Image (tube, rainbow, N blue to C red):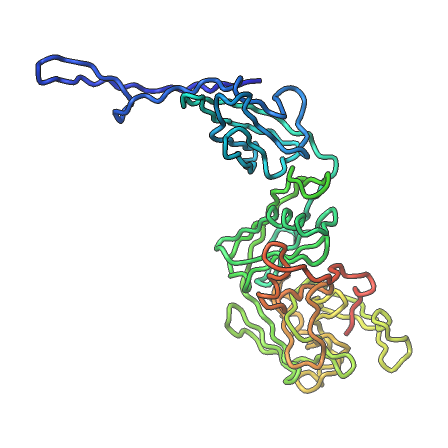
Length: 418
């Protein structure tokens, strides 16, 4: 189907008084320049390898526009889909051929405008609309966490429906997964594994930030016969900056809100052989009651280290079972010695206060412990333990080949330890 656009030119006529007394009428454009020629219909001058019609164009094939004769040339080609995405292309130096240099989107409707000129320099125009065939294989992204209010340390996650291993495919995905915030901050994606990405800013989110994650993957070619599908957007609000810093050497926790100390709590952390992990962790969730059994972390029943305890006001910081929780059985050691199996224990009253004060995404940091550094991935959110330069290395757009770190926590690591 050919569409010839209708142009409307507004003429202005001006009375010109000549010094000899004659009166003449001059007509032209409002600025006084001669009228530009109306473009002719260039339908007979150019041809496409994908003519308009009822059939749909194969998005896996490049789009080409050529002149039918050497009596004229192509001067410009613009191709845009209904989502506002432009199709990149290249025009030959002689103006006889234009070819797309980027893949078409699948299941999309395009409008193509081809500008030409004939041997006399007169402008021509051809407008064509067409649709591409829908994809048969789709890649979608599920953003996390759920929409809501979170702490300043909360990363945005994206779980892909299909693994993407090659770097070019990862670039396509990363360009299409957009995270914006108000106020704006510098941030980047990190490929945890072939199906998982984490996004964090350079520094903690500012208090009051509104974060939006959206996908522009729909119809975009990711790989061989693989195209992006539609994904649900995500909206987060960042609350107060809550930070809990536990010093395992002094057996105390300092809790800050927006930089001001609001509480100092005597605690106990992991004893030798069960030392609490050092580093920055992020609150994963809260459970008012948990039954903690030593067998869940590999301690044999009946051994000197075995336990089976009802635990209240438990704030989870790792998937493997590290919590901040009430430990009334160790009140005598809190503030003086480390006697736990890796968790941070405190009095019931302090644990209840902590439980009610923090939210998912808040920061819990441990310093001066003999334990290992918190895992970056796989056992919660240890994302902030990487420097910004190291974090950017995990991006397909700004870094090298991402580390194969294995992002998903396994079921065997989901058990609590006191």
